[in-house]
Image 1 (tube, rainbow, N blue to C red):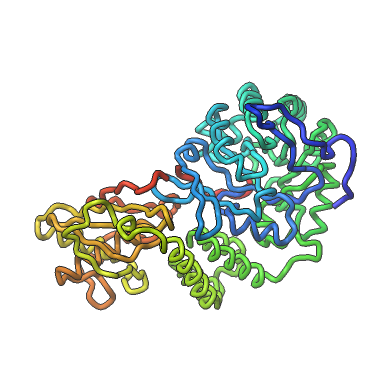
Image 2: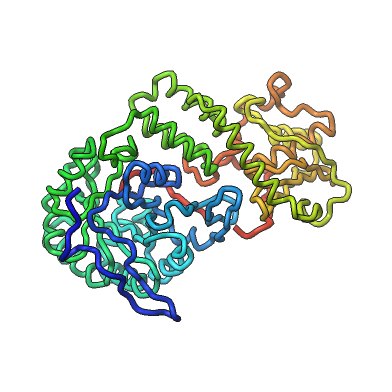
Length: 514
């Protein structure tokens, strides 16, 4: 990239006003002359952001997160992983960050309301370096809520949202837009946006209706960069322009932008930011997996990102192993990293044990009334069961045959280590596994196993499954509840369970590089 400049668009000293003794909107994050990882849904999670930083990115954006869902979240310090988690009421981690990226991560917000936007910004501002408003996503799920590219047709709302954030948060505020049908309208909009006091603007050089196969308009981005005094971040060059590191600088020159934001080219190989050139894909994927395991990334997200890297190699033997993987352990095994998974699991278990060592035993129990609960130390191992059968399904079938009330699960999360435990009630008798687990679904499956084994009933393991269950829809026992591709089946017996700690939901759909 070109040497740092002084003048329009260059970094300036911290500026701002004070709110209750706190400096508001201090421009500590410089957006000039930077390599930036673009916000990408299901890609811009913590492991990918850290990997991009390793390979030379200066700033990394998280995936777009919706204001209404973030406002339901509780901020939780995760002492086992050394992270800060924003956790939904259902226990799902919506946004996870760590100290390593603290001064380089930008939180991208999906919003159509200034007050909600400010509430989310204040929720996360102490854990991120900047706040960005998504005004470029053309997908219907975003635009129909008045968010994303829908904002481009409402300059008054844009101005209200950005002005509210600029004056109300302690972090620099930016926005990411697409270009309008005419250059005149585009320039009019960006000049109005600049007047709100934002620190920078990212421009995807395509219109709302255009897709990656359409050429990116370097000329429009250049006109914007020459018009504004704040840094302009050029985006949209992966398809036609950016194949390697040197192409990033060529794209910057062609657009006269201050910085370049890379989406798909970074998704395919995050070492695109490395000045020395692309690293072998196998090395990149192994490093990514290490971060995914270290930070307990949900396996469906890990799998998705690895599939984006493999691309045309998805039909290779390794691609087929990845496609078949149904857990983080199996993903590691597919890449010859089984030992890494075991070592990481032991380390995390050891840290959990240390955290629990000083906690009274009664504080670890599930609920107040533990008398009369039948307990066993069991865990649910997906590999021991056929794909279409789980213990919960077997227990539900048995209750139906016996004309008993449906099983009722009470599932809680232990604040000390954020593990889950579950008690299932069947025929007025309670059953519980004494081993806590990392997800609600796994904990409930374990409770179902205790009930089935106590009653001497088949639990669906390979070799003893009931034929009557074969035609039932598969239940994914450890599936991310926010994964739009794999929603849980609506089994009638699954009553939800109050969490032990108040924990909003997260990503909306499969979308890359807006």
